[in-house]
Image 1 (cartoon, rainbow, N blue to C red):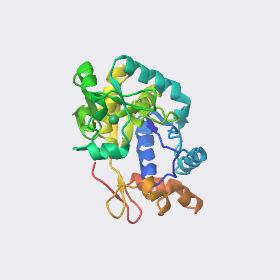
Image 2 (spheres, rainbow, N blue to C red):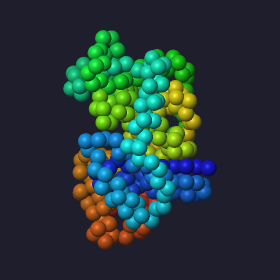
Image 3 (cartoon, protein in one colour):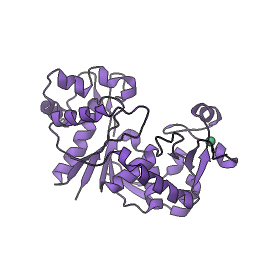
Amino acid sequence: MIVTRFAPSPNGSLHLGHAFSAIVAHDLAREAGGKFVLRIEDIDGARSRPELADEFREDLAWLGLEWDEVAPQSARIEHYREAAGRLQAMDLLYPCTCTRSEIAAAATETGPEGPLYPGTCKRREIDTSQPVAWRLDVERALARAGPLEWADALQGVQRADPLALGDVVLVRKDAATPASYHLAATLDDAADGVTLVTRGRDLFAATHVHRLLQALLGLPVPRWHHHPLLLDADGRKLAKRRGSASQGFGLADRRRAGEDGVLLAEQLRLHRFPADISLGDA
Ligand SMILES: [Zn+2]
């Protein structure tokens, strides 16, 4: 059975890009007689606003979607700790105390997600009695896992290339948010039985790391569907941090203004977008 999911973080209201993503996931499951799952990714402690989870549910219902909801990330902290402990026991993690600006200053290469971590802390003694992040030693992990592949519904079979993202953080320095997106999302998709991971094209590169984590942790390997992103008038993807939810593209605002959500969903399915919105390349 096909199981897809929509996994928003309650750190800001949803916008049309989220609606498009949720609809793609929902429809791929429904067309195959499968299951569509909602998961609230609420471990970003400082920025998480629990009340937004209810807003998200109202938005999805307004779009005419039906879902099964699974446990939020905040209920799974122990699960993340246990998995990080296993990677640690395999000697695949190393502590890092670098700040964002230190990394930016030391980086000589840029990866798909910004300055590439130059491995500074891999080569020095770190006092782990202070708060530290734990990074995956990707080279060592790859040597253990061997060559890996994964399949994208739109772009075909990919050779996993996690080195492109460098030694990613798996356990954050912030004790309240112990797992990084990479670790938490990979574990959650396995725990939720997700067989087709649908998400935006912007997370394509992250999948290389997720595939590696699946191999290391003995998790089932789903298929992926990285859909194109909705772009604004400047050709940039809609993003919460740029205020896309408050520039007329916000779902809750449109819902409260009386727009017909089911009709909006139909339009998005047909790739008929509001003015100033277009669909990027797959
Ligand atoms: Zn470091």
